[in-house]
Image 1 (cartoon, helix red, strand yellow):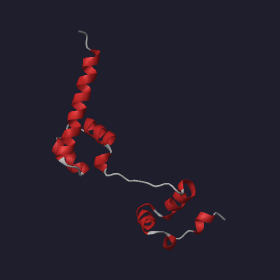
Image 2 (cartoon, rainbow, N blue to C red):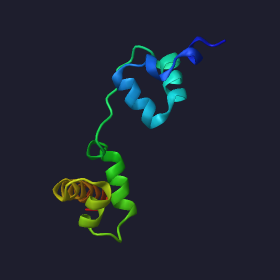
Image 3 (cartoon, helix red, strand yellow):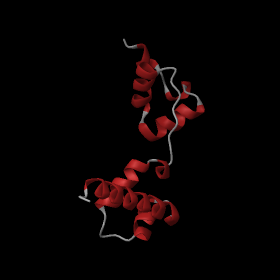
Length: 99
């Protein structure tokens, strides 16, 4: 029998119990078996900039305010990322323009 299958919810630390409540005990067993000893940081959605950029690009029909509400991030943060997108697009177009 797999030793990890013997781990029960009550055996877990507080943080692992929290994860088990969200992901299930089986996921915790897999994490313990394959990733034991690693420390994880789970960022807020507002810190996953590549996702936010893609989300903004894929939802051009929505206002920045709507996007902010859907992502539960500040409108100012959304505006800042939107401005980065515009600046990056502008730089790319300037690089390929004929002068």
